[in-house]
Amino acid sequence: QVQLVESGGGLVQAGDSLRLSCAASGRTFSSYAMGWFRQAPGKERELVAAISWSGTSAYGDLASGRFTISRDNAKNTVYLQMNSLKPEDTAVYYCAADRAGAWDIRLKDRDYHYWGQGTQVTVSS
Image (cartoon, rainbow, N blue to C red; front, side, top):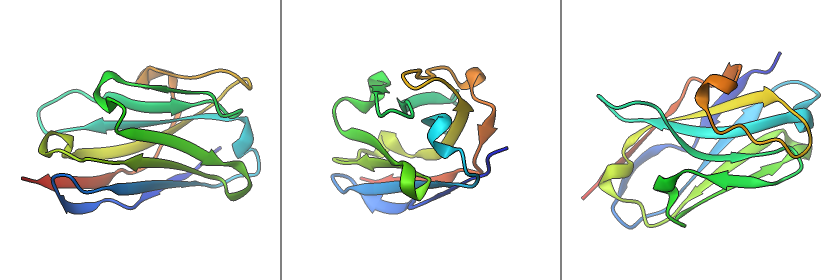
């Protein structure tokens, strides 16, 4: 079992940067594929970025080269660096985890078994 706690959200202006963190409990964090998703009001949850436990990453179309996912297995933490934020990036951002092989990446939210409570990101124009 893995418990996930996101942090780092907040209210920023367009063009600003934020770094989200997701701290995971458990001793086998390095065996989990991780992902960041977001959900805006009235919209479906969508993939932001995903990373295998070996460090291979993939991004949703919305990332557009502005977001970077990374992980520190020694700290049981995955990060999402968000640059050049836009008002349309306003959403609740969720961290997710699933046991996986070293190079496996999970791109669909239905493939993740564990979820954090989410952190709100609001970008003003």
